[in-house]
Length: 395
Image 1 (tube, rainbow, N blue to C red):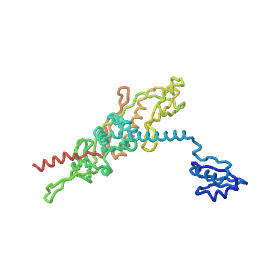
Image 2: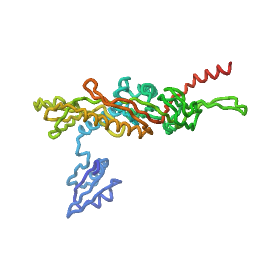
Image 3: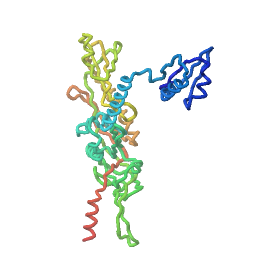
Image 4: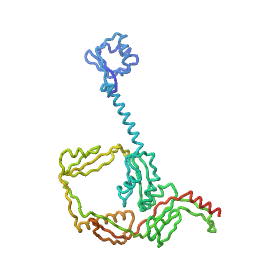
């Protein structure tokens, strides 16, 4: 539909006079009907066209204002314009803050565990993006979780994404930009080592401790007499596997809450609505709550959370979990845990676990032995290396 124009109605006999003297005014949608004719002109040509009709003494039966503009008054357009400006400014201000933290690549550690650690170190939703130092967060996670061999943080939109790898893989070297060593993230016995880049520091069958260098990122250059004439730094790369013994422990409560899912209702609110759910007056209602940030589009989250409430009209029951049932549940969790390890390249050799009762909980604990890929990134301290190199030259 056109934005703004005028529709004229006049006697048919004046049509050719208007066409001959219209002086650049474009007539559109000319319709002849008996002794009457109608046509349209652009709104910007109205005053000139009316002056032309007055000079030619051509009477106009009527004319009407048409177009989208006529559907809205100026006040409505003004309000819509101001509202649009406010929304755009709000979106721009929101884009300067973090409203969601995501974790990618985790297996052993749950997203809730990692996010709890991130929140504990003052990296939370609602902080300014300029205040988030990704390198600091990467070092915190790497130092606190020794099983995590590589961490990379990035900000997309209003989403802080934490990428992790729980064991070293070759693709890490293509994503890094700083030279580093590969050090052991566990203690064990080396089963095999293949160095693609860097200088291997251990051999097959050697016992290694946690934190010990496996492949050095400092490569020596030697002459024909096997004398070191220089060094250069690189990103260490290789495949190292070791036989490692791990401790396993998993708990399960001796009681559990059972709810009847037959009479269940789910509500969605863009605000906390616990008080709304209590208006029904049923005191025995059992409510499960969850929330997630609303997204305008991919990786652009808003400071508004969608709250989900699931209401069970019957009060939940507490029942006792038998030892046999607990053993089945804990055994299933252990098998699922081992399946996740096998996806990461682990080979389970043997396991020695048993179930016992500890403080109103069932506990499946023990140890297992496996062959696993080991190694984690440890950046080379370039300033320290330069000082040591200078000291060696002086000596």
